[in-house]
Image 1: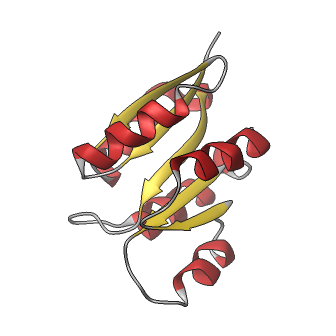
Image 2: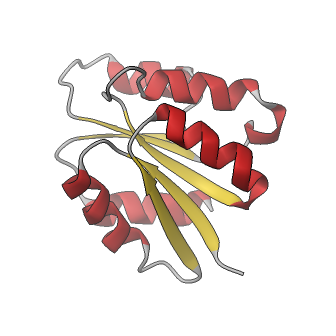
Length: 123
């Protein structure tokens, strides 16, 4: 049974790039959604079938920190690998993301290969 990585990204081009990179992992499938509300819906529907989440920080309405907080508040997702990516240049963001429960943080532009390798280790 393949492991599912949920990609939460409002940019279709960024989501496609991630899907291409991550589907090279053995026995991995990706599912992309455009925002926090959709991601929470998938998590409620798929539950523990989601092996990891890769989320953008800046999205309309709610952001990656909102998603991170809601997932970490749910005991089923405390250990779920969550990787955050952001195009924001604030140098404090990586430390904040890790302090709030992200498993890893990547600044845009980032290497899809490096992100894939990080997820391999987390899975």
